[in-house]
Image (cartoon, rainbow, N blue to C red; front, side, top):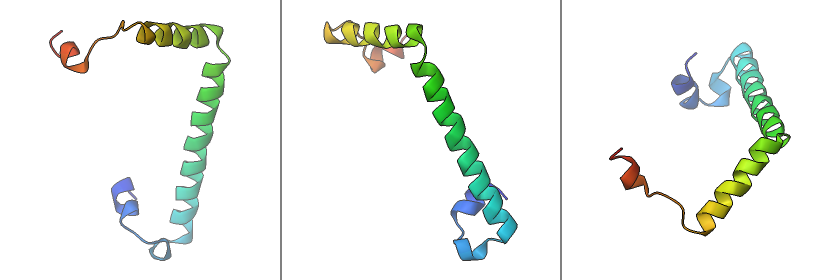
Length: 71
């Protein structure tokens, strides 16, 4: 069943198997996202890059989105 179709259905319109699959996929995606966040936040280079980006932003070392489209 496609995502678009599932979004247009009510829970009562799903079969037990479709509901189980939907829940399973949602939990799997959420856990993958959380693991990715933990891995990123455990990386010193990642944290350092965030600090650097924030410092650059504070001093105005940024580009406007419209300027990036002309690259």
